[in-house]
Image 1: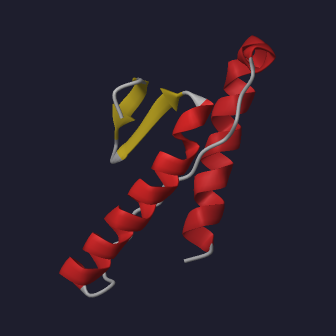
Image 2: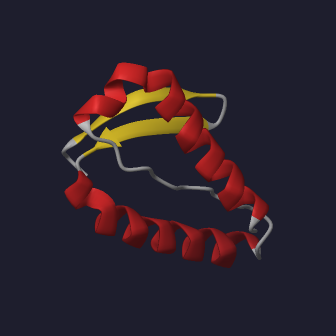
Length: 80
C-alpha cells in the first residue's frame, strides 16, 4: 500500500488515508491478517479494521468523519 498517508498511530490504533481504489486491497489485507492471527493465537487475538469513503466536502467537517470511522471499527469489534 504505497499510496497512503498515516494520520494517527498510537494506543494500539492507527488510521490511514488512502484512495478509494485501495478498498479491495484493504479487504484482502483484512482477511490475510485475520487468518494469520487466528492461526497463530487460536482466536485469542482480534484485529479490527474498517474504512469509510470520503469525498472532498467531507474534509470540511473532518472531526465528524473521524468519529464515523471510529464508530465503524466499534461495530466491527462488536460483531466479533
